[in-house]
Length: 207
Length: 290
Image (tube, rainbow over all chains, first blue to last red; front, side, top):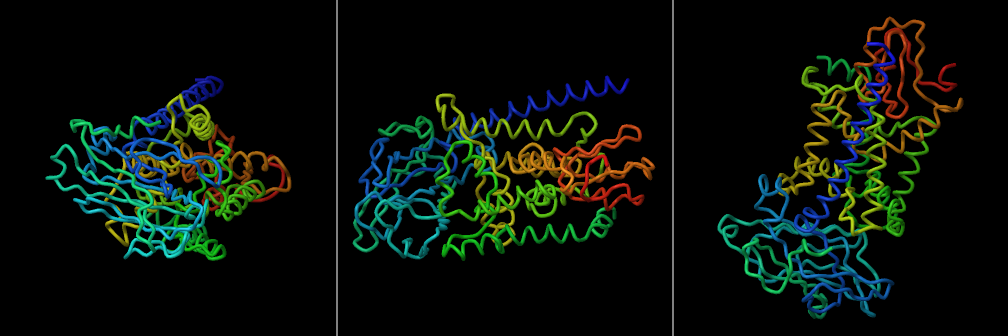
């Protein structure tokens, strides 16, 4: 084969490889949107005070713009196939966005209600967090967001719970740690496709 | 044995790679720790906090406000990119924990088990194909949500998985949760791009926007006489092929006695300079073909 032919062939293979890669990147973006983001380590906004969130809604942020908040309904059967095959018994939720939409500061705490399984908390923030009481040690000012926040909640589902249609049905509460007043309640549910509908839509239906 | 020889031959680079872990990876993460200390932040310093992918995602979506509180990222990025222009992508070759860790795990793997397409494709096509589609997907996810795309930056993040694996050394519980994206990344970054990819730098070629942008700058900078770059002088070359063999980023191809250094993928790791016992390679200033 002549050097010219070799160069042409290499160029064609290179274009083909790039095309495959571009297709994979776009496919990965579509898969993330349709399957991974709504059901695996789903991320959500937590404004406070926003009351009990019974449907997807937006709330005004005094700092500007609005914040989308929704009940969290995870259909565990809609998770990615790798997750369902290799690591089905642990599921997570996550937030980076705790926003004070009030006109007064709040020193907040977080808690789950109706907890029937082990939940591991992994909280890191740019302000001090007390893992014992699950409260921040300083108040969040009006219109401010907890800086550098990363919260992962891991739910460990034992086999007897995984045999049920509904794995967890409770809520995440944001409360004022000084007055114990509940500021925001976000319903959280992990369920199978076979679970009876109870008003909430699967997270995968939110865009 | 070859692995140990390589370590000894280029010991400063491997010490630098260890330094990269110390600078960016928890539990030390010294550079991020220093940045947070200067900011008065109690955030946990880890590889995720010094993410070099997210800024490209933010730039594509115009979400610059997110740099608030992460000003240090601008300095990190500015340092990496300006170094790339003047000295080549030294961060990639000498410090990056994500690329260097896969290069290290690749070294003991027998050659016959490795994917080697060096002569079949131009790896720049992978690198810039990825960069273009990464930016396009981020922008389309933000500005054309009806297309049903999400940014791939965080969901498929090798930095997070490396940090998780390191966390798992100190706390096995850190390895209890894997989402599908993480599992795919372990396959694409560590296994295919690392263990089974000649040189172990597959992810750098097909999954790293920072590396791609660094090499755009290096390609431009290397055309100028006052910048540093790897140069080849064929007058002493005996065509032994060692340089092509040790290059982890598929940047050296030989056609007969002609050697081509691909500036779009070269990480200035200087493995070629160290391995050549005929002193054909040098890392120096000057015009490329001078």
